[in-house]
Amino acid sequence: MQTSKDMIERPGFPIAFIGHGTPLNALDDNAYTRGWAALAAKLARPRAILSISAHWYTRGTAVTAMERPRTIYDFGYKNLQHLTYPAPGDPILAEEVANLLAPIEVVRDHSWGLDHGTWTVLLKAYPEADIPVVQLSIDGTKSPQFHRELGRRLAPLRDKNILILATGNIVHNLEYFIRSPGGAPPFAWAERFDRLVRDKLTEREWDDMLRVNLKSVYAVIHYAAPRMIAQRSGRIIAVSSTSGQRGEAFHTHYSASKGAVISLTKGLSSELARHNILVNCVAPGWVDTDMSKPTLETKAGRKSVLAAIPLARVAKPDEIAGPILFAASDLATFVTGEVINVNGGAVLCG
Image (cartoon, rainbow, N blue to C red):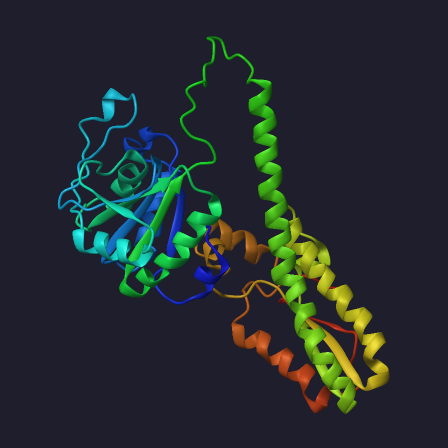
């Protein structure tokens, strides 16, 4: 899911971005199509869907305003043309979109329909095709900032049970994608572009992880510490993770951020002790939360997790709250710089 920070944090119906891949996904049952169906199943049923597809580029902004949008076969695959997605349109929603985007001129379109960037995804996500769908075009003459502003203006639709769905991929319309028989090696420019995109995505994920897990802790302490120094007392209790102590393969950005919280705790405990401020850290292991559900709800995932915990179960949230309360209480007046492990014995270190 990609969107602006204000749209993420405001309440309302979720928004989604789906990389739709090849149109042939419409014929297939694979991990991607099952993922689209699973996403739809997790969401409440929307009143309507506003779709922004990477395949409707226009000069100016347009919105489909017909009662019955046609299924568009905007590709070369003849074996897909027996498939249709007969979802109704929603002229009232189209008009509301136009009003929200005013004074930008919005064309009420009656000729486009649902292109494959929309219908091949919705065919798997909402196969009944009984939810009204409206498409909004991408103005090819405008900047990313212009479209970001459009997204901000459309945010109120989320309060009306409208699913705002964007689909696309990093690249599109690869007419130059020609491979000779026999498995020729990829073009050098394609490999360079692939590395560039991968590196940029990895760097952004790294930065986001540090911002959420480390910089947020710093920001709260930076605000609170001067007030504690002024009153010559205080308790700072950070939350790290067992991952920050032992590292975690394939999640090194997470373990690095949590390890940094531990180092921050130990450094500040010495720095602030002269002001009678105690600084400690609680390091949970696996906890039964929404964050852990994707792993714990699978048989193989739960088995793997429990095999590494001597107590053979995951913690409940209340079991993490207890040690935090202890560190904040009068029972811990001579405890500072400590990492309190709450992991069922999974990491036997301090």
